[in-house]
Image 1 (tube, rainbow, N blue to C red):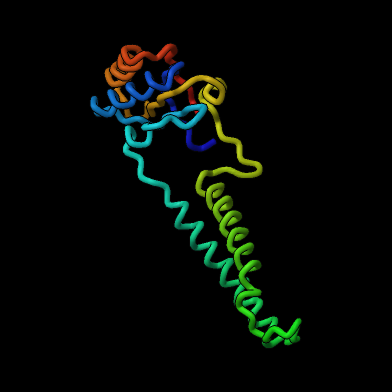
Image 2 (image 1 turned 135 degrees about the horizontal axis):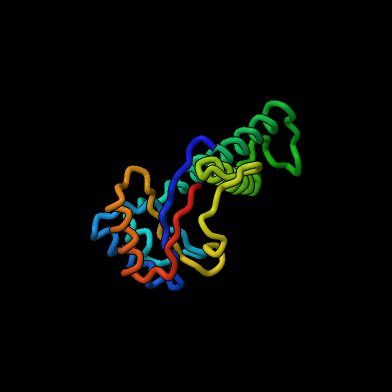
Length: 175
């Protein structure tokens, strides 16, 4: 591992206490590396000043590609490659194309969003991401601070903050 990080983190048992701690940390101008929770916490995005995800834009683009693939593919097949009159319909029958166009729109959008999510998130087969504490995925909440560049005084300030904000446990781990 080339990039080691020394992480100072506090564990909380309640999401409301965690949310208040995040707001206090932001007010105290502490640089939060990340917050880990076992489930989504309402209001946490706003407290951390996180921007809205742009994954829906990716979904729209992949959906548009799926629509064009289906519609243009069927147009080429039924008008140029294999023009057969079926049941008295014209070669280019747009209403008959709608179900397949819809299905490929949904298919391309869903697969495209999953692939982009995994690539940007650094997830996928063979990737192992270190965890700070296994209980974070079960019932604990965590605020993590990167210790890189912090003085001993700053580290003591963060530890004091974690203790005062209701952290039940305070740990340091190299990931």
